[in-house]
Image (cartoon, rainbow, N blue to C red; front, side):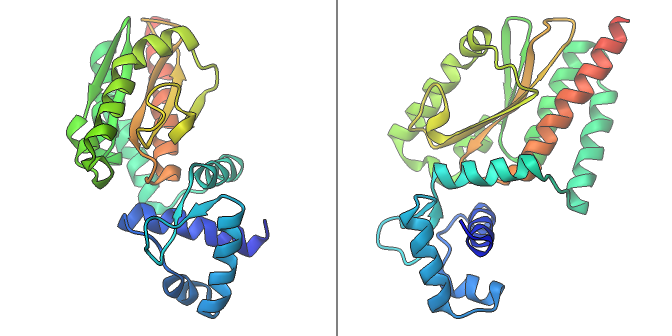
Length: 238
């Protein structure tokens, strides 16, 4: 993939996350200050490589799971924060620190993630899964299809036992679309951070949202939530 193709893919991912409609060549031509024909040629190559696709008969393109994975991998190697994202991180850190008891602290962190990301928030507290923001998830335009909603529900029903059995070992794990172990056709992305606390050495906090989301912001916030909780909860134990 060329640098320009990667930049076009990044723009499609970010624009689609913002407007929830396929991204056309005319918009990108203005952004990159080249002709629409040039953009169409680059988009055709990205589509041939499997990074974007054309839904229905729309002239625009949307990212595929492969495109999102490429984007997320690049983010992980070179994370950058906007000023607004730094403010969100400060708000999250402040609310976690004022949580009080360990369970309340974890719930505060989840509720704050819900508010800041507009996704469903979740965390393991002992052997239970705490969830908040279900209306956020099912309020997204992706989930107007009944069968897709059933897949999301199946994922949620099986998430806690899967976390307990699989115990993802990375500080931050991102499962995009069909990468999810359960509900692979639900069109969701699960972003979770592992942390140590009084309930378990492998507790998790994170979000579940549509594949169309602001990965940079959500990944940074989920990662920070895990770090803050571990620091505060392990500190309380000591």
